[in-house]
Image 1: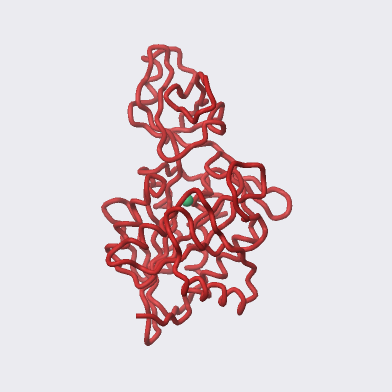
Image 2 (image 1 turned 60 degrees about the horizontal axis):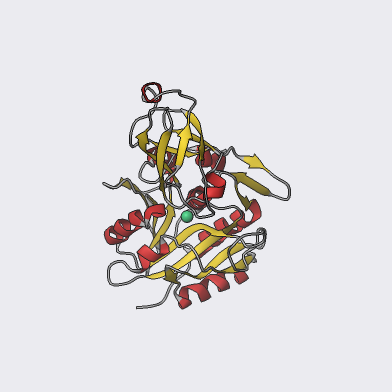
Length: 330
Ligand SMILES: [Zn+2]
């Protein structure tokens, strides 16, 4: 099953190759051209046939948050730094897996409530630096272990749903779209978790007329330190704003209309923490009209993020219909 495979693929920010290869294999029969750029972004082009077609850039990031080895201590403890934002509370005592399959437990001395990672290490069971060094070296990266599980009421959980769920939505949309109106660039980006780096260069290359980021967004229907209205099962998310972007009002209106016309369940998404590739697209070139399709997610940036598959399906439907609209602006 594709979503399960995507979630379990290894793709810590900057090290997305496994995810890229999986997606490339999946999309090749459906695309007109595929480019992998120097940073590792995968750009899958589908040609439009409308008389007044626009260039649409879609972006979902392949990378996930993770840990990277900074030092191996004499007692075999493997010191790590974070790649992207991790909560200390979900990292502590969680299992992590290195790219070569070596597994360890993240631990450390926690002396206060700060999100402080300097004392964090991975314990692979090695008793000395010499032994640990046989398996792990400086710079190696590790991701959460979080198997794909099906829960009640159409909910699923796994590691890395941020943003393999976006990758999945784009791949599924690509498979369903036959002859689009507009030129569509499905970009599977790298290093979003480190500051939306991959989308930046993709947008410079593509020079889109409009951009849409497809990503998770934090849900607010569980005890957490975030404020907002996003709920699992309430439909696809139409992004209004996050700290990194204000979405284009015309594109939002079109998105709402698209949902109404096609009976697609939707919710508005306004959040006060986080960001997506929408920001990079928005501020590229001379400025690009940008929107976002999101999936409300509980427990984001942890080993067991949770989404509702009806929201995912609604997002696929919205994306398919939306990219086939005629957009009128200068
Ligand atoms: Zn994301």
